[in-house]
Image (cartoon, rainbow, N blue to C red):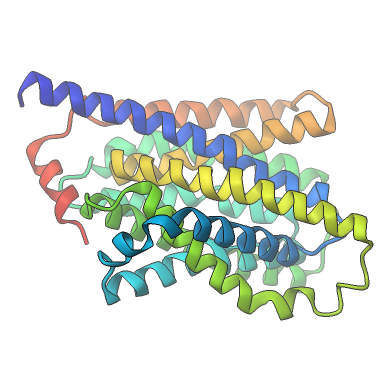
Length: 327
């Protein structure tokens, strides 16, 4: 491989890593939202966030709509629909139900497996890094999740077996939903080089907003009179903040990382969401991390470093070909 090509590949990888860290910093803010608007159900927050996300996406995409729409075929419309559903709408509903039934600890522990599932699937692609080279990174990631889960479970109240099983079932469904989204989205963005990360993010936002419209009756029926005007204003502020920071910017950063990194590295980037969520939680509670929380952060950071080290400095020809042919 020519030196210039190798340098570009390394530069793309470092930029992708930066976008992955930025994604985690923004997505970690999602975990503060329930604390800011405790009077509302998770579904209320989701609908508010995705309605604003859809509205902002429509406003930003409107000046270039004809040009963008002319590139979209029927298959692209269907892809947008199921990606918006799996990565946003359905995923959040499943996650919210898991939290309500099984508790935050169980749900967060299950979501900690997302980097593992995406990385394992990515290792099966043609030209990908061999699974055995990714084992140290995966083991460290699992250890980090175990430390977080153990610390959270030790502080949680006991729940009935039935509630725990329901929480487990919906947590697994949320895990499968977001894994399918991450894999499908990354494959499409790497294959369709003409589609920019920004435009694709806005299109998914538009589709997610349409889906949120359908959920309004389910989310807010009977809730309008149950909350004060001040509470609704606070929900609006949180929804706007989540839509701009987490959906527009966060998803844009994630799409850029998905374009620049192999899937075996993309999966590992999700662990930064856990790290930043933990940091934000500590700042909110105004306390220092526990021993288990410190160990978890060390393991998570080490898992990403191990994943980067497992990949060659520049991809070989076979890997580059596969990244454009993946479907």
